[in-house]
Amino acid sequence: MGAPGTARARARTALTREILDVARRQLATVGAAGLSLRAVAHELEMVPSGLYRYFASRDVLLTALIVEAYTAVGDQAESALAQTRDSNHRDRWCAVCTSVRDWAVAHPQEFALIYGSPVPDYRAPTDTVAPSARVYTLLLGILSDSARAGLLAPPSTQAPLPTTLAEDAAALLSALNFSDLTPEVLLRGITAWTQILGALSQELFGHLGGAFRTNADLFTHTVELTADLVGLAPRR
Amino acid sequence: MGAPGTARARARTALTREILDVARRQLATVGAAGLSLRAVAHELEMVPSGLYRYFASRDVLLTALIVEAYTAVGDQAESALAQTRDSNHRDRWCAVCTSVRDWAVAHPQEFALIYGSPVPDYRAPTDTVAPSARVYTLLLGILSDSARAGLLAPPSTQAPLPTTLAEDAAALLSALNFSDLTPEVLLRGITAWTQILGALSQELFGHLGGAFRTNADLFTHTVELTADLVGLAPRR
DNA sequence: AAGATATCAAGAACACCGTTCTCGATTCGG
DNA sequence: CCGAATCGAGAACGGTGTTCTTGATATCTT
Image (cartoon, rainbow over all chains, first blue to last red; front, side, top):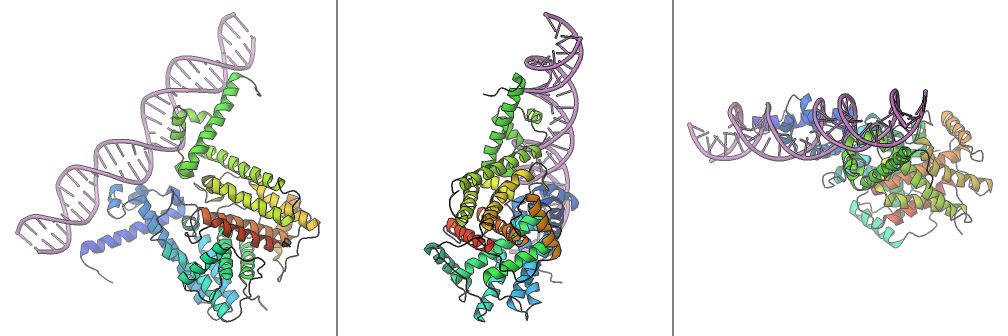
């Protein structure tokens, strides 16, 4: 294995990893609000103050967990997309969305950590924006592929977009290097992604009372509606 | 003023009200996670343990605040709907959605309290389900009116619903006394409401990085898309 | 009207939390 | 090899929700 530098450095990275693992496991059972530095330290058989040599504060540890959660769901979505490389664009869209739900259902507390209400007040954006954009970018890439293949149905627009909205959308498109997409399609993509996250929030946070026996069916139905919304060609 | 019963009973209800008001005001500044019983008691110039004669625990107080928040947004949505009684159905739909956003932007912490990730683990559902259904029912009522007037566009369905999903939707329809709506329309309504909540979560929790200068424009665009989704007749 | 009873405010105490500081022991770099 | 940096451990501070005890006060019953 890679042994970078001194023994002390190796021990440091190993213990840092171990702290994160224990914290992530405790997070899964007790939630972000209930995550206790003392409990993490106790499980590692060290004193609470010792943790501060590895994470400057509880918020820093939470930020690291947030980044890990973003990369986890990003990895899962990317592998799901890779396994459907030769399917049509709609199926790839649905596969990515389903993989996100699979991850969220398997890790509800981590989902709440990254997509729920911020725990204390705001979160440090700098480290988390890049990992958070991955799933997002994946979905836009599918739309871009479909548009380049001439298969993306143009949005049945009825009113022109407000100018500031169109400008911001165009700026975001060029910033993300999606020159194949129009501002209208980008906004539909954003709306679709919002829809997916909203559906998962409703389901995982218990906001839609147990009215539906199989939330998976409700979710796939929602995903199909988002595919229609963004203009992906229907099956058959 | 209504003086129900003894002086002690009146003092009790008055102090209960006062506790709730102080708690709600502190909630607005410090958030649900940071709400402190001791701080509330201190502002009321009483000792922390004295609070327990009025609320059995912090969670009970939070539940009361949740009910109040649901009632507040429900009242605002109902008054917004009442002011557009003679408009077309689409405008009424948009008015209700906009009023919800107005309330959410004005009371972000209360929005997070009722629509965000649950604070400790789960929330006691019994007292909160009835107030939480109000906005929801309002929107379905607009759809029911539109359907009864023959103005609701049938959903361009492409695949039949899974049986369990259709059954659950039908059961929910009869439970809510919306016999004018089909399961397909109910599911679109649920999806639309999920979309609204998702958009507000994204905006208020800062999940869509400040990419858009005017979130209000983005939201109205989203609302129009939901109106299209549920089949409300377009303007003009 | 007087005694029994329930409710009240107040305080002390417990167990937990995040965080800071100090203090020897250990390890690293020159 | 020795100065310097890093480490684990412990004590301590101020904060939290919650429970219990105590004595005063209001209500209900006879």
